[in-house]
Image 1 (cartoon, helix red, strand yellow):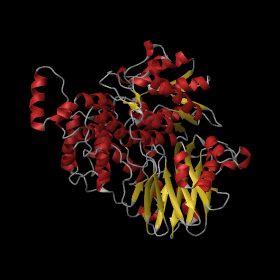
Image 2: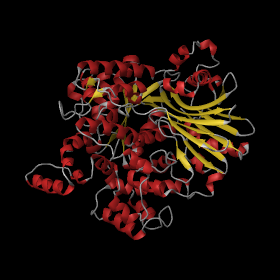
Image 3: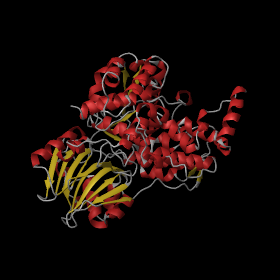
Image 4: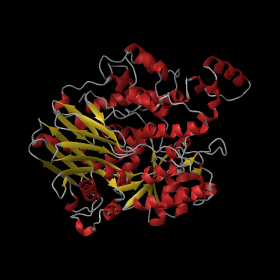
Length: 615
């Protein structure tokens, strides 16, 4: 993992200014800083976290052997040995033993499209074509690694961190928030790609190539989309479970390639314990990291300890407290250079800090819930699917009668469609709240496309496939953003085996049977777990790295929440309805409104603004 930064155009900064902005991502790569320029149209900066071939031979930027291409790459390409073999080359044909040099040789030999059909990893790449004077910005297919860009005054700026864009002199004096991005954030707690918070700035989408020429013309191409389902395997087939076992074992083995030691995160759920088991098969000296809570409702550290004891590995447990929250709060927000409102970023920040004390690389379990139908909402949506055969008035009448008879019917059926219900479920502030506190509000088309209700979902299987794709391009992007920023602030690389290309491609071949042949979420992963751990310790419901947000907001954070949201005009100035916002915040502290997450999202926006914009 590293930090990349660059400018392309006609009005470049002087080298000192450029290096100052490049230094903003130093924590992403504290082992080396690199620079290259053609002294005309482009300059590239790089901060390296040395994992493969830590010698200076692995430093970037790198220039291809034919001189045509210059690359800076953040991330890891796990199958670079395979690519090297396909190129007909050996280790001796390369100056370094890094994945970056092999990927650069592939671009040189095969071109961009063919190379991207093969690469498997997590990466953000800036690839400069010196012959045609074009910059290609490429983001990995799952969106694990970030890549931002902005265009202003005939200059393109691109970077791993958003503050490197908006602190650039071309943008800094004219920072105007996009109203739709502000609405997306207040509603969802993050800003979905391709949007970014300020005008004239964007994110490269997962699986996308953004190509920009000297005229600042932009061409966008999706090189990877989540695979269309094919239903080759039933979810309950023993053959499918055996195949998944083999793939996960192979994937974890490939992600253990490193010239520095590797650890792992360990929760009390299913995903990370399963990954730890595969790691342990290859590396018995594994060490794991867990965050616990003093509140039993949020603590699963005892189960995590049972898993580590079963494997016979060292587990580093840290009990997260309100004192940690207060001590970490400001530094934690420094890790998030774009507005971000998932409060589990706080314990994530702590567990990354703990892991970095011993390791530079860890493996985690992100993606398991999204790819293998692990969230309880999947079953809730499918079990209520027949309600959407009726019009809304009929639904409401029938639901009222059912509830009086003691039948549990979700209030989500009041939505126009399953897709709209999913959007409401993921929303931290719904439109009723938005209308009261943010008068000029409308969500971006990009967000609404993720929840597109023009797609007709005919049955349970269609709903489950749609939900998985929705999670992949929606909620999962928030999860990945959270962990990337928390980890890279500490110079820690987090690898995610469940989002390996081989796992994604195999998962598309599975016919889901949730709510037909079984009622068990994440069925296949739990079957694998039952073969690897004693059934007595396998926990069915994951709590994750979390804490009691309501208690914290109403005690140690209350004064600061009131100061930032009530006692002054919140950022952006003259945007929020002060009277409506004050009533909303007070209703929460008067126990009339109970959604703590919605308050945190608003608080997080102000903390971000105070950290990055108002200073």
